[in-house]
Image 1 (cartoon, one colour):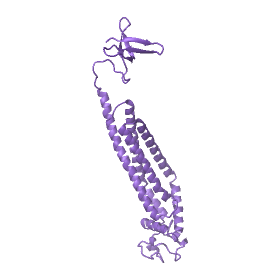
Image 2 (tube, helix red, strand yellow):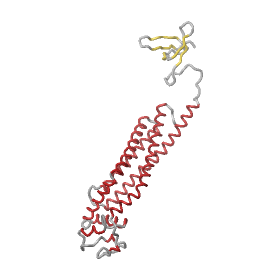
Image 3 (cartoon, rainbow, N blue to C red):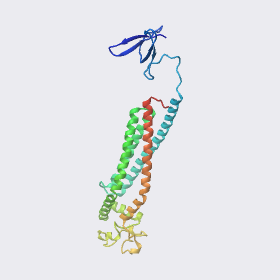
Amino acid sequence: MDWGLNRDGARGKEWALVEDKEAWAFIPAFGYQTEPGGSRFSFSTPVGMGVEAPEEGNPSRGPAAMAVEGGMRCVKILLYVFLVAFCACAVGLIVVGIGAQLVLSQTISQGATPGSVLPVVIIAVGAFLFLVAIVGCCGACKENYCLMITFVIFLSLIVLVEVAAAIAGYVFRDKVMSEFNKDFRQQMKNYPKQNQTALILDRMQENFKCCGAANYTDWETMLLEPKGRVPDSCCINVTQGCGINYNVKEIYTEGCVEKIGFWLRSNVLVVAAAALGIAFVEVLGIVFACCLVKSIQSGYEVM
């Protein structure tokens, strides 16, 4: 087909006049070859500019493009699996936080203490993770570039916060135990006055098989009646009044602070391994999300 040329020198653009039996239209010409005589040229246009090249038929997609779309489909499925697991973890944190709050509300005296604030923090973190997972699900379903970028940013921030929290926990581990020792001794002073404080200390001493902060003699300075007794929860075999005129062989003599600290140190490897596994999964989620973002940018439609 012959194409007529109309050159617009002022704007530096070239326009091709389509010679058609039914319609006339001006289409940008990005490439041409002049025919002998210099008055005609053949029209060509880059792919993706909204203008169809004057070719016979529509060629099918190449195998490379189909392979890329197939890979992106697998990435999208893996991202869905990650998001489902992420939602489950978020809901689990919310449930754990609510359960801890219900238990502590019955055992810890009124006031803002590290123990009473922790469940609220867990619930807030779980709710935030759930919202981030919802953003990721919506972005993946709609293949929305902005939502996926938002998801990647928030997930990256979560990983950074987790790493910072792990480092802070390791650096301030001695400070945490020192504060726990101070708080435990304060609760011992409130033992005769507050039933809730007595309940939580009794449970701790029974569960960890301990007595007092450093050892059982810590109770000698407390205002317990009669003087010189220990709580019944210090007894190996708990009975009513067993802490009065006690025999050292019949009570726990080790302190609770050291025993609880040993329990924490014994389980820190399990906690660290779990945190490392969660962080690894989150990094995989970031990688999958970035792959999908790249696919959206490239214009591949992933069903």
